[in-house]
Amino acid sequence: MCCWRGCWRISSSSSSSSSSSSFAATRTPQQRAWILEQLAERRRDVHTGLKQLNLAIKGAAQDSEQFLNALNLATSVCSLRLKKVDNKKLRNLIFNIRREMITKIGAEEDPRLIFQYAVLILHSQMSSGMLHTPSKLIPQITVILETKLRPDGKRAMQRAQELLADDAVIAALASSRDKKKEGAKEKKAKKNGAGGEGNDQGDNYDDGLGEEGKLENLRSAAKKFGISRDTISKLLEEGMDDEDMPDLTVEDLIDDMGIPEAQANLVVAAVSGEGEEGATTVEEDNKDSGGDDAKVKSQQQQQDEEEKETADKIAELQKCAGELKKMGSEPRKALLQDS
Image (cartoon, rainbow, N blue to C red; front, side, top):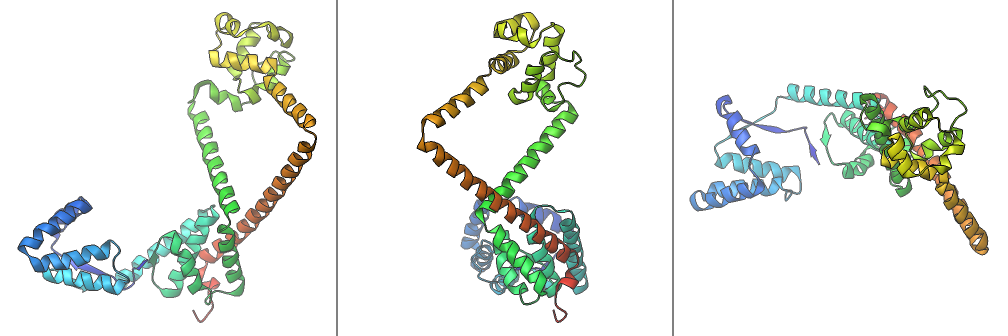
């Protein structure tokens, strides 16, 4: 965790800063270690200073004071000059970052990100600084905020943190995000006309097909089995109806009607009712199993209860997220006056 309040910057000539920074940015950790080894033979003082700074950057420093001491030693042996950042520029930087985060939290829908944004915004407002921290350290910041928040805001933050630690809630949120992504991809594919016949599966199978009353059974099963509108249209053009379909084979559909093999297999499966037969077999097995039927019913009931409990928690989390979003959008009102 590092704070931008009280930072330092290195002053160097503009002519060499861009080239030197690009050189440093392209060095790998292994290359930096090799450079340090070469310095050990020629400049022991420079090697010692840079080695300590390198270790501090890699995480060996326990706090910011150790890092700044290592930085001060490294710049001293390299004859670089340090000067404090202009406080006015620093305030403007912090203000602009906080304003950008307030804009983001207003448009965010993910409760997890809303919680993180709210915590960082409120801490920035309280300390007049800005933290750059990984999400795993956010709970530590909430401990600092608890004494500075109004009671209703404190309850919302604590409850949101509890719910976000629930495995079932986390899994439900991840599933919801995945469904949204898949929906967006499908919508984009439809809009761009990509994906061939698969794009027709979400359309209304009766729109534009005509021939009302024909192939009603196949049309009703088309979406379930993934049969495209184009396939239905070709069957209608050949004058097919539901009573004609059981006599058709996959080869007939491919050779005589020009239907792709994958679609032909789906049509035959839909007509033969393989999915329904499988469901009937499962039902018969359950009936024959006697006591197992009650066990399955009990498990299903338990699963339904767990799903309902998770849904209630998600609804409560959404409510807390709404309160946190409001707190993040108006951080001054969320904090106590003495903060």
